[in-house]
Amino acid sequence: MPHSMKERRPNVLLITADQLREDCVGFSGKYPVRTPHIDRLSEQGVSFSHAYSVLPVCAPARQSLLRGRRPETFGALWNYSGALPVAALPPEAYTWTRALAESGYATAYLGKWGVNPVHGPAAYGFDSYVSEAEYHDFISQKHPDVRYEHGFFGEESPLPLEDAETHWFAARASETLERLQGDGRPWHMALHFSDPHLPCRPSLPFAGMYAAADIPEWAGFRDTFAGKPYIQRQQLESWGVADYDWQDWAPIVARYYAIISQLDDAIGQVLGTLERLGMADNTIVIFTADHGDMCGSHGMMDKHYIMYDDVVRVPLIIRMPGVVGDVEVGGRCDRFVYNFLDLPPTLLELLNLQTHDPGDLQGRSLVPLLAGEEPADWRDAAVSTYNGQQFGLYTQRMIRTADWKYVWNLTDVDELYDMVNDPGELVNVRGKLEHAELLAVLRRRLYEQLSADGDAIVANEWTRRQLLQGAKLDGI
Image (cartoon, rainbow, N blue to C red; front, side, top):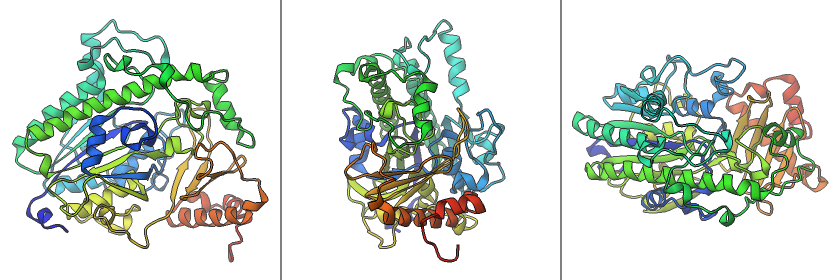
């Protein structure tokens, strides 16, 4: 561990966005979204170009972050606010945040929760909590006449920027930082923004930042759905967007860009407060998102029933100035990582804290990658999962390598995408004979990873047989 880490215990500032695509931050260089503060953070730290969400749905992903295990292992299959009841992370479960609190850290939670419908952050190791409900109360009292007309499709917000949710929480975060500075203890602050989750309602001046005519089509927009699962075409009908062309989507995407830039401005205020208070040089800063957003890609809304990179691939930045001295400033790592699953073991190692059982955590510490090392045994693929909700249950398991993506759809046709020649994932090549051997290899690898992670879907005789059909696994 670096010498400076031994001398003082660093603070931890975790900032997350909700439904932010990896390709919609400026430093990715993929789409014209302006995020100068996030870009500056990436220049000062290490950014991960292939960070994946283990389950691209809000509540399961957030529970996985605290627990350090895949959501299926403790029953968090979909959002607990859905139509069917589902398990949520119980307060007696291990969480690394409680380990921090028990080791003497002051802890604070602000923003979106999604971990348990009954128990709040206090049950998981946090000393204080500023909730979304408090913001909504603020708006109902100060702006009681505000009404919105366009539902999930979004619109310009009439609220002044300082009263927008992004900036209201940034102000509360700055107040919390000042309080934590006076506490005297090392601290961990989790700031979970609810944007850019639809509906996107940016305030001025950000609402006018992007013209619809200047918004380029997503790489995956022109999808015919030939040879793809039926549920994907059905999504367009369910949302009422089956007849939308790009001129219909471009204003929606422009608002998505706008709320991202607004969020970036709010993050800049928080990071500015951290610097003003003189705490930046002893604070690990992490920025990521729970998952991405379709926002018109493949003609779809939201994030359900698909495993496209639009929703499973997310930004991840870790900045540690003055804490880890050997990290190359502005480094970029292309190895496969899990943003939420790998963070618990990473922080426990950086902070020199012992969990009750290190083997109980299913992620892997990113410390070697942060130090610029290239471990020979590092994973060369990512596995993400989905279990349904919203319009009906639908089970998916995905494995993504550098060149290929295989999606196992248990109740419909599988998907296979050439990620080198078809990064928009438009053409399902699952049925081509020349890919039969590759498909068998990917099925086997997926089975082995799901088995290692304790995913009950492969413990079932019938579903296991389906996955391993053609995989030629001896003894199965």
